[in-house]
Image (cartoon, rainbow, N blue to C red):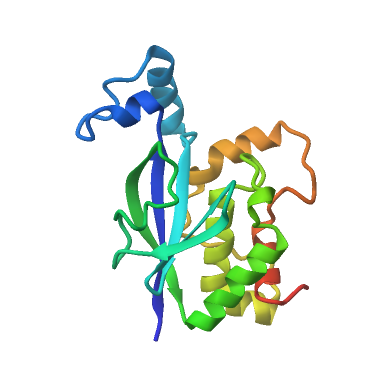
Length: 199
């Protein structure tokens, strides 16, 4: 039986914005923050935290813990348990069904273990080169496109429903930095490694 693979997106907002009313979250922003949100976010340069739900569990990546797993609400969304590892300034935005997987829980656990052992330990976290959004895209790619990656070894496949704007700020920032080849996330190659198919 197939399980939905769900991407959960949280806006990362300033502490001042986070303390304001959830009905009017942007009315308490300072001038600079208002400019940042008002100008850059519509261009897809907002700051976001993401996690992936599959088979009743939520998986997310952070700088201290690495990959964490909690229970998840049915169909994605937000709950006290699923927020346990969300940054304190994260406000739930939306959940998107990225596709479906036929992986059973043992296979999901194996993918997570390979990701932990390779490049998604907490000490590998980097805001521009290896963040929660890189993890979410890599993990979802392994779950949804696993057969294509294993059988065909096609490195041009991409998750069409994964929103590009979620990690655009990090990608834009990292394009101006020197890229450490071991630190920079290669979504397809790392999804293939997580599936044990180094090609």
